[in-house]
Image 1 (cartoon, helix red, strand yellow):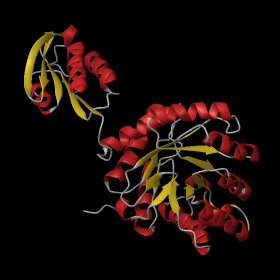
Image 2 (image 1 turned 90 degrees about the horizontal axis):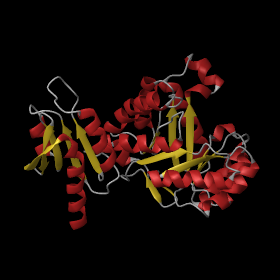
Image 3 (image 1 turned 60 degrees about the vertical axis):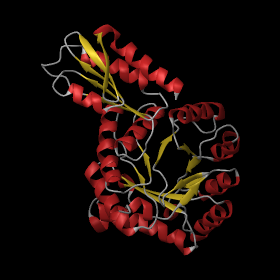
Image 4 (image 1 turned 120 degrees about the horizontal axis):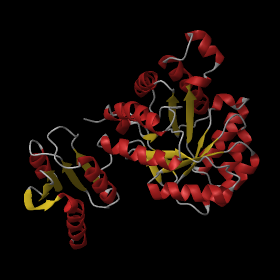
Length: 355
C-alpha cells in the first residue's frame, strides 16, 4: 500500500531528495555561532561522521549569512538556513549557496518581501521549510481557537504556504512542532490529510537527552509507522551529534532505514546465570559501527535464548557461567563467560573480511 510519505511532492535539498518515495532523512542543528566558521565546520563534520543527512544553521544576522559560502566550501552535507523576520538574510544566503531555507513567509513583512524570497529561491533551486511552533502561534489564531491545537497549527502552516503559492512557489516542506507529544502527533496527522508537501517531523523543547529521546521516539516513531513524515529531527538539550544518533535509531526502529547492525538482547530475569547486562553492553558497543547488514543477539538463559539466537545471524545464548555461540542457527561452540564477547566479535569480523 502506498504510504502518505510516498505521495507528497518531491523536493531536492542540495543533492538529497525529500518526499515522493525518497528515504526518510535525519536532520540536526548546529549550536555554534554561524559566523564562527571554523567552529561551525568542525561541528558539521562531526555530524556528517555520525550520519546526519541535513544540518541546519542559525542565521540571526548578516555576518552569519555571509559566512555560509565559506562553510559550504568545507562540508558535504546539505545546509539549511534558519531565518526569522528579516527577508534580506534569506536573499543573502540564497546567493551564497545555501541548500534550503527555513522561514515563515507571514513573518517577513510586506508581500513584496515574500515575492523577492520566492523568486530568489526559485532561481537558485532552493526549497523553503515553513516551520510552525505551538509556542509562537499568531495572536489571531490563539484568539480564534483559545489555545494551541492541531487545527490552529495547520491553519498557520496553510496561511504561510498560501503566500508562497501566490507567487508560484511550491518547493515547500512543512513542520508543526509542539512540546506536547499528543498535540504534535494530532497536528501532523491532520497536516498529512491537507498538504501535498513533505513533512519535517519533530517534538520541540523535549529537554535533556533521556527525556527528549523518549518523547521523540514516541511522537516521531508513531507518525513514521503510520506512513507520515519525510524528514525528522530529534531535539535534545545535549550535544547535537547525539540528536543524529537518536534520529537514526528511531528511523531504523520504524523499519525505514535498512543496513547496519540490528542488536537484540533480552531483559534480565531470575533465570539468568551470567552477567547479561555487562555482556550485552560490551557486544553492542563493539558491533554497533560495523558496516554489515546483520542481526546480533545476546540472550540470557535457556528458555528463549537459543531460539532467539538461532534466528539472528550471530548470537549468544547464556548458561551457567558460560554460553553458546550461534551462527545462522548453528551452534559453533560453548565458551566461558569471559570469552563470549571476544569470540563472537572475532567471528563476525572474520566473516566480514571474507565477504
